[in-house]
Image 1 (tube, rainbow, N blue to C red):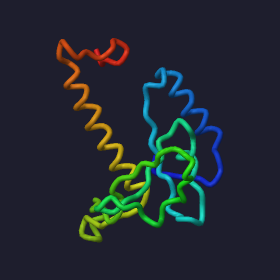
Image 2 (image 1 turned 90 degrees about the vertical axis):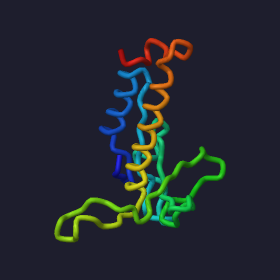
Image 3 (image 1 turned 45 degrees about the horizontal axis):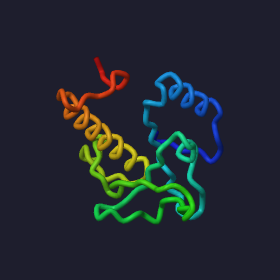
Image 4 (image 1 turned 120 degrees about the vertical axis):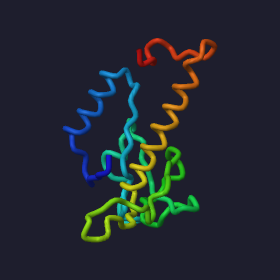
Length: 138
């Protein structure tokens, strides 16, 4: 989810929890952490326990100052490249413009996770490494 709110939106929380229930918790939710730096906490829905919060890094993997503060006693934080990522844009600006932020990093993370899950799924189709029936696509 490439959006964030300063307050919880009960309708969104209800929808996320309903999706988890319907899928026996076999679903991943990602959300942009925030782009307000130390000025604001992690936004909703990224702050929910059922959501993986994604932070922006540069191409070296260093976390950006625009990310919210990390609670040293809190959970592990995740981030991926989200600084100056070439992005398709309006043709009036030559069709490409670098974009930055935790929303950009969230899209990159979703793509990476999808590729890893597909790769793992392909490897688990062998006889000796079968997915449990409830996890298989068939």
